[in-house]
Length: 292
Image (tube, rainbow, N blue to C red):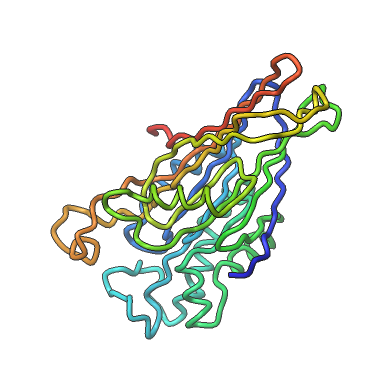
């Protein structure tokens, strides 16, 4: 990875005191037979109905059944992709499947499954998918990185410069997460590595939860036009997968490595802002998708 951060600014317009939502997904592994297409469709339909934009933090695809891939298994390929143009067929069918939701997607980042194909097959499946989606649907989906920054911008009335923003640092993830700490140590490490974030999003380890950490800081108050001490909350989340690998617990690679059942689905980020005297109060949280 390079030190360059790709910043994507999505302009959101909300009323004071109301919520702005962004769906944070990761680890779809869409082409894998174990990806729950029914649940994924329900979640995307919900986002479409509620006008919730979607950000994807890596491993959109699985891509493990190509020729010469040592991870391959004949039982882990969908029939529609079981052909001599395996990678091409994944891109083509994915464009068809996701096109009804094209306007929802803002940024799609890379995961280790996409970067492995670049490394060993010398083709960028994710960029090909995004390019064709944009061409066919006249959208402006952006390709993110394996990690990066997203500046979430939303219009605020009755404020001099007209906008508020929340900065999200994302990283797809690394390592196995740990059966005991379930990635908590990775969130703590993020607090030591990254400066200035309001939100941190992590995927890869197929867990699903969030927590808030608080920092004592010194910031400029535009209402009072002075710098003052502030307790700043940082919202951190780990997003789950849509690939359910445990099944009945009887066999398979997931079982053989003693991996537990994993929570399925992404999270919905909410940003709530209200005015209190000369100050603007901001609260950021995230929740799992509702039962649908």
